[in-house]
Each structure stands twice: as C-alpha cells, then as structure tokens.
Image (cartoon, rainbow, N blue to C red; front, side):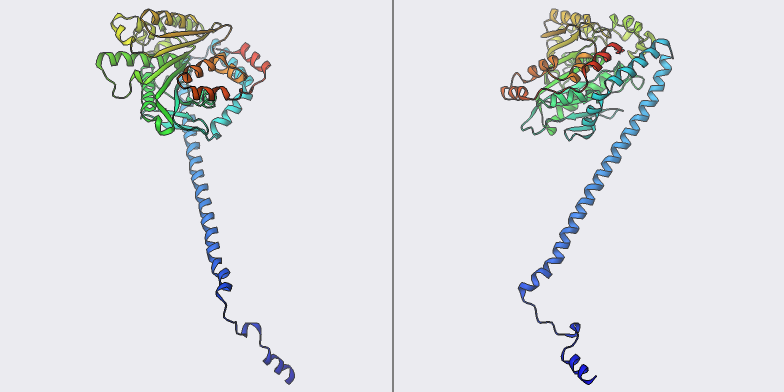
Length: 419
C-alpha cells in the first residue's frame, strides 16, 4: 500500500498536472474556434432571415390570391344575376370547360412559368382603384434598356385578367421585349368608362416608371386583344382627342407610344350589339357594360375617328397595325377592315394582316401553344425591333418555341371552342 501511495504521489492525476504554457502558434486554433462558431451563427441567422422573408412573401401572395378569388367569385355571382340561367349560357359554359380541359397541358406549363419564374414580377400597383395591378415579364440576362409592350387582355369586358397575357409575355420576353400586362376593372365591378380610365392609368405608369425595371421609355408599344383591343383603341383615340383639344399631356402622351397592335378587336359597337346578342352576350347586359345605348358612339373608336371635328386628333395617333382571323365568329374580321378604311380616309398610318382560316383564339392562344413559327408574333417582333439591328439579330437567334399541346388536342379544342 505504501508503495502504491508513493507511485500515485510521483504521478498525480491528469487534472492535477501543471499544464505547460502554450505557445502563440498552439493558441491560434483555440482562439479561432469562437470565430468559426460566430460565422456559422451568422450564416444560420442569414438563412433564417431569408426563409422568413420568403415566408412573408409567400403569405402575402397567398393572401392576395385569396382576396382576388373572393372578389372574382362575388363578381361572378353578380354577373350571373345579370345573365340569368339560359340554354345558351349553359351550352357556352360546357363548351368552355371542354375547351380549357383540352388545352390544360399547355395551361399547366404556362401557370408554372407565371408563378415560379424569376422573370415574372406579379401584381405591381399602378393606381388606386381595385385591380389596378400589372405583371411584368422581364427578359433574362438583358443589358441596356429594352423595348416595352403594354398589353391589355381580352375577356368580353367581364372576365379579363392580367394573367391571361402570360403566354404572350413569355414569348416576347424570350425575344428581348419587356412586357407589362395590365389588369383593369371588369363588369360589374366597373363599366366601360372605368375600364378606359384604368388602362389610361396603367399606360401612364408604364410611360413614367418602366425605366426602373429595365424598359426603354422611348420605345413603348400598346397591344390589345379582343375586348382589350377595343378598350386600348378607345383609350388611344380619346387621349389623342383630349391632347388636341386641351393640350393635356400631364400624365402621358400619345406621342410616347411607337405603335398600337390590335388583335381580333371590335371598333364599332353599333354594328356589334345584335351580333353579340345572338352569341349570348345579351343586349341588356352589353348596354349595361357600355353605360347605355347613348354611349355606344362615344366608345366606338371607328365612329370617333369619322367625326370631322377630331380630324386633327387623328394625326397624333401612332402607327396602327391590326390583326384578324377570317374565321373569327366572336368578332367578324369585317370590324378590322372597316376600321382600316376609316383610318386611311383620315390619313392615319395603318396596316391590316388577315389570317385565313384563323378563329378568334387561334392567333392569341392556339398558335403559340402549337410551337414552331408564329406568324403574328413574328410580325409584332419585327415591327418592334426594326429600328435596332442588334436586337433584331437577337430575336432571330431565339430557339424555335416548343410545342406545349399535342396537335390533335388543339384541333379538338378548336372544334368545341365557344369563342
């Protein structure tokens, strides 16, 4: 026992031993340890902050979508009270469901792009009224200011929505063009006067703010499709008349627009009342949208242009290019032809492209979903890029668009289409 005690005394436990002073080199790792730990904490904190920001953004988007869904649902029921439940509307609704189902493979891909692409900036506020929002489609990897398209979607003045422009926005953005798709109040939330006011406000926002998003304020083009073409044309003509009479260019000027592209539009409502009534957009509803029969003339661009008193205003209009399919049953191509004749008689610069056998939705929807060459899109891009050879070359180098919907489904959709 005494020997064991002496051995332990000679060799004390490790914790009792004196630790030799460490050299500076040996202390360095120990000193670095808290720093490394601090870096990890900072990284984790940054990750948590990014996650929190994304969560807030996601909750905001979900809340906005829920609010819009509630609003649209309420307005739909209000609209149904105007329409009543008749055979024509039931048939049109069923046809619309079949049409949408057949094109669903393409719609799903476009929706994915719309909600998840970093090139899409959704719901930018441009005014104080309900639905004063716009979506921006920004070209990827672009340098310098890009030409801009302000697009007004269609929807029979009742179901228009900025999201309908996602496919056109994507195709144009691929070709180096920044696209702003404008939303606006639809009936019964607003009447035609409100729609024109909203679109004018949206154009004003684009003219005055688009440079912040990479757009060139010196190269802005206005595009409208179907009811959107009518609203855009009304906005353009009324603005020209106002500038000519009052010289008011406080918000935006017609001269800031390089051209107007009207796709499958109607420009003389006096000729369309009975036509729409036969197709289910009943006269009483249509007149409610247009603020009464007495307002049909003042919201018909063709009629306004015919007025001798506004001859000088016509000279302010930009180049107008009209597109229409010869098999369009929703709005006959005679509407674009008559508008062309009237504008030419008044000395405006105007062109018309007719597409044989194309329906109301072929130019805007089925043809882009088909992939390959899109003649109307090529005409629009060529017109926009014609003054800039470098961007024209970029547009040509864009790969051919791939097909989003099989051909047999597109043909079936064309057969059952209610448009």
